[in-house]
Each structure stands twice: as C-alpha cells, then as structure tokens.
Image 1: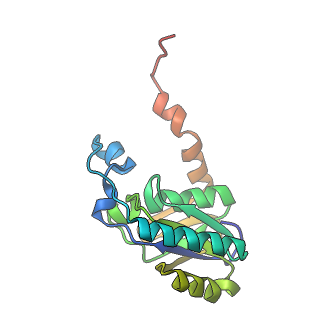
Image 2: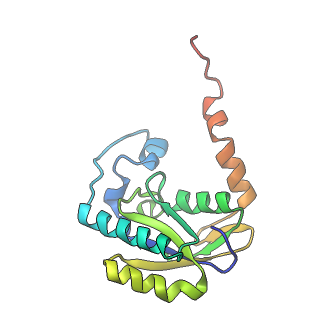
Amino acid sequence: FRDDGDVVFAAGHEPDASSLAGSQYLRMLHGAIAGRPSIDLEAEARLQRFLVEAAESGLLTSAHDVSAGGLAVTLAECCILGHIGAEVEGIGRSAAALFGEAQSLAVVACAAADEDLLSELAEKHGVPLRGIGIVGGTHLRGEGFDATVDDLRAAYERGLPHALEGVTANV
C-alpha cells in the first residue's frame, strides 16, 4: 500500500474451502499438506490481462497476489511493505476467507479518484472486483483483528529465526 485514502480491492475469485488445499494454513495449524489446489486458467488469464492494463494505465498504487498465506497475510504484507495501515471489511472470518490461497485473486489499491476507472476496467476484462477497505493509519484493522504495522513487521522479520530456534546444523 502507498497512500492514505487509497481504496483497496479484492480482484478475482473469492476464496472458498477448496482454496485451503495445500495451503500454509493447513501445514502450520494442522501439520498437514492435503488436497490439491485447482485453477481456472480462463479466470487467471482475465485477471492477468486486467492487472497488466491497470498497471500500464497508471491506475494501481499497489498489487499483490494472494498465493502465499491467503488474504490476511497478503494484507499484512501490503501494510509492511508500504509502512502504512489499512481498514478492511467484508472479507469474512472463516479460515478459507482469511487464509485460503485462492488462485486468480489479487489485492489491489488505487487512488480514490481512479476507483470508477478501475471498476470499469475490471468489468471490461470480466474480473470480479470487490472493495474491501481504505489505506491509512498505523494499524491493519478488520473484523476480529487489529494489529499495528510495527507489530506485523516484527512478527514477519522474526519468523525465520523463531522457526529455527533449537535447530542445529549438520555441517
């Protein structure tokens, strides 16, 4: 994310239970890598064409795929990378909604003045586009969660050292 007041969208197909197949969520919380992700290649092609044209037109201030960790992780990464928070709503609270690694889904942001143009472009390409929030502040807030960008960054940066605690190398 980049600027206060930018509008945040989910572009593409919404995650469902099948988007948890093979996900980090299943591995981390349940110790299982199960299921097989599926992809609709036509939907993926439409999304990619939309993203390319939106970027070339200068409409996007941010774009990030939802392939690793799901929507919740993607939103956190956008806040961390942009050093700015966001208020999000209507993304749901289910594991699939938050952590489903849906194919053909991206989080995008644009200036509020470009919202209608971005919506028209998404419609032209046949890509579902759903407003989910506004960029700004120092927190990532949504239904059931509230974290400062600094806390998100700290958790992100100490993830690997934490995972390696107690691991010794066989060298």
